[in-house]
Amino acid sequence: MSLSHACFAAILYYDYLLTLRREVDFFWMKPRRSWMFVLFVANRYITLLSRVPAMVSTFWPRSWGEDGTLSATTHCKVLRTTNASYPSCKTVAVHDQVTVITVQIIAGIIMIIRVYALYMKSRRVLLFLVLVILAGIGVGCWAILSPSPSTARFVPISPLRNGCNVPTTYEQAERNAIAWSGQMAFDAIVFVLTLWRTLRVRRLGNRTLLDIFIRDGALYFGLMTGANVANITTLLVCNTSTTKSLFLGFTNTISSIMISRLMLNLRDPKILMFSQPMIPVPHHCKHDSIFELQAVEKEHEGNRYYIAEY
Image 1: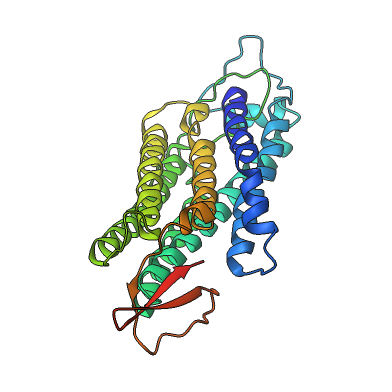
Image 2: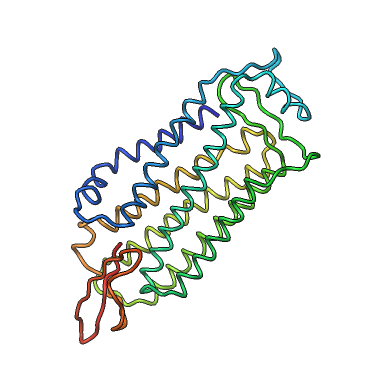
């Protein structure tokens, strides 16, 4: 597990260094602060800082028997009595779960705002997506907080010389797989709504902001679907606690990286300077909103249009 933690951290911090200059130019150097700035910082730095406890825990020593194995029926009791770092490992496990939920909620909010802006601040679309994400949060809380029955079978623990391997049950793994399936369904809904809207909107020029919307949305959906499928498969198929959680950190890391890049791309002046998307908007559409969307109106062929930028 220590190798997987190191790989996830390497990917995360490498991408952070690659995009740090763009972050400073597009967010920190701008005089205006908004909710999108807060969400960007939260998504980026909660994930960055959350990897520190996971990395530290990989160096905690374990105290197994000489053969390094545990019985599937007694491993929980043995773990508590032979591993002095169990309370700390349990704390790290809870911390990881809270981080996953927090990062996925932030990513969901950002994706909702993208679709909300693309549909000209449609309240029906907003309400629908909010209900979907609330349902997903409810399923996630159920998966994590629901206690396993006393007769539940524990997943065998792989012997490790260092690091944490908190015991889990097969029922818990199945509930986690259901929760991640809900996340994958939400991503699919967002992508379909984005694709539907961009195909119906008239575009001027060869490269527009809408091209970036659909390109980044497709990349995000493709990568997250692959990560979620791998995560769900390992949760349902693998037979040790280490392998069942193998792709959990990877899925959360990729989600945070992709969300950060989505937001950076929409603020890149090299993209915006070539052409702007022209989206028909009603006369009563206002510039202000609770999400502080920036609306820029233009006149074109006697019609009113606006540019949704967040």
